[in-house]
Length: 312
Image 1 (tube, rainbow, N blue to C red):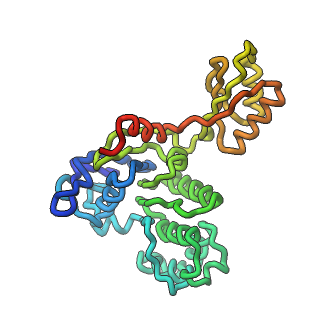
Image 2: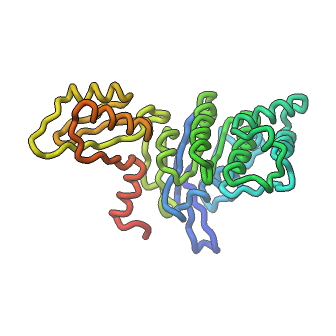
Image 3: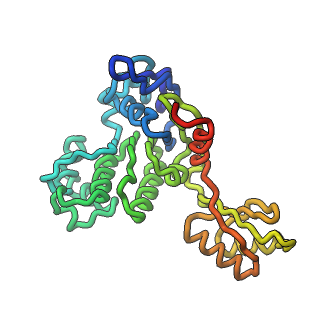
């Protein structure tokens, strides 16, 4: 299995006046969840369009398992959720999914059951499945689009802002589905502005700016400790024993990362974990002067870019 190889990719618009991609070179391994982040106008969507074979580059080359990205072999094993959904709004959700099931040449005898399973998988109830798509909310449209993208268990999944307009329950569902996709060995390419979600699900992330890959971050996808809290005690000579902090962290299901009085750093899974940690620290008699979240690694890429002057 070759995965995705991108070599010297360049793409311009307006007769070469706008350089959307400028010599991008990347390799995405089979089974990897790869994120693309960057400021607006950085070239992220253009890169995704080239990967899908929708746009033809001016220079460079892309291969997916050794094939051109618009090869029918690649199309047959790919799923795609676009940022801007254009659906047949007169159809019901069930009919829409059955239609795409047929277009993908999946098993006709299994169509009804597989469509029902796909709808339930993304949290669309039977009543919603029989409702015309024109009556769907933005979040429901995203769920339906994700169900369509995952039909037939594609080997490659391309997602452009998949959690846009989705409520918190939908975001949790999105993360769970991505975990399932990864567990069966599929490769996922994710373009998103929701940095906390990218940090939780991706193995590696490319920071793109002005058509170039400016930085690459390797992450621990699926890490149970996804957020870091910084605790500050009053600077009045009070020293809290490390053992007290460790016991409070264990009871809260958190992880003590560092103690440097008057500061301590803890890793927690989510907001509920942060609340549990604060309760346990207070119960242990730890005097808290301040509790603040630290910027994630991906947020720091944007902050560092701004410090350098931001977009040129």
